[in-house]
Amino acid sequence: MKDYHINIFYSDEDEGYIADVPDLKNCSAFGETPNEALLQVLAAQKLWLDEARNSNLPIPTPQYRPIIYKAI
Image (cartoon, rainbow, N blue to C red; front, side, top):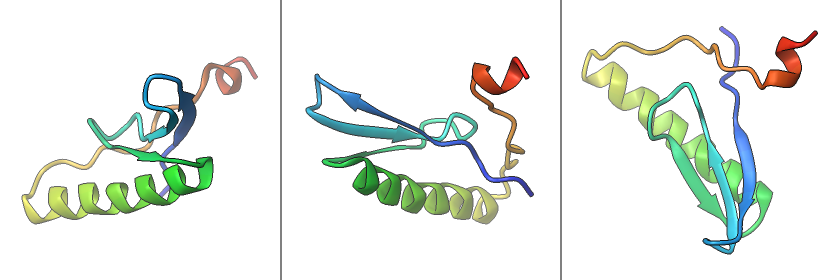
């Protein structure tokens, strides 16, 4: 299985970094640094997937790719 893509960006409004997993609805996290946001979203991703498995919900396959990869 491929890994899920993770976006990390700085939010002026939140004064910190937001990380999200586009393929997993509402899976995101906050950190004061990019690395902290990454660690937090990896933990959120694990919880998201564990909950989906425990609830017998479908788990999306990784499909999101930034536009830069689609041009190649």
